[in-house]
Length: 205
Image (cartoon, rainbow, N blue to C red; front, top):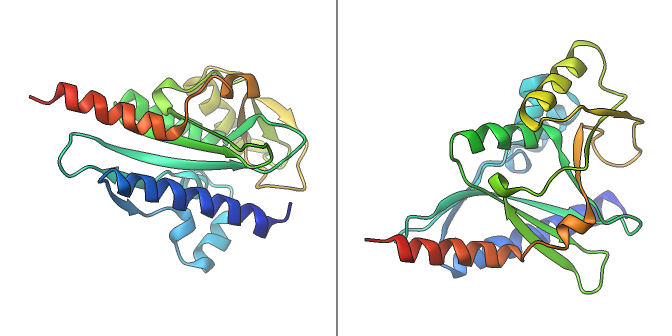
């Protein structure tokens, strides 16, 4: 599938999540890598410094409910490879999420596999993330930067990273893998939002 087609699927999922959240009364804001000027995004795409990779992978889409005590970050991931149905998440994102979980910050991960019929749509809160099968670091990462990333993976994800070849698709950034069997046990991302809202209703004074 072409990059343009993958981008279209990803944009459609983002639009669907945003529309659903607005239907539930949430106010939304966004300041992600995808929203910055094209020339800035093009530069950051190929830089390997810790700051550049953080800026590339941060999840700064936020949802805030005006009348209920519910606010969270949210992130989307679309799967477009018909050969495999595992979920791959950038390791820098996973490390960043892990630091936020330590601080009690909520982030909803919304996932759609467009290669299956019907499409698979699941979601999870990052503090309840399914177990990772492994974390891989492509060979383009070398020297001190590779060791920095590997050390962060060990510290925050509790896993020993595995080396792998560069791919012709994707960013070739380090990534974690959630097995398709784990995904099949998850509820729809919409249900995750509704359950959080219901819990807030019961906890309201």
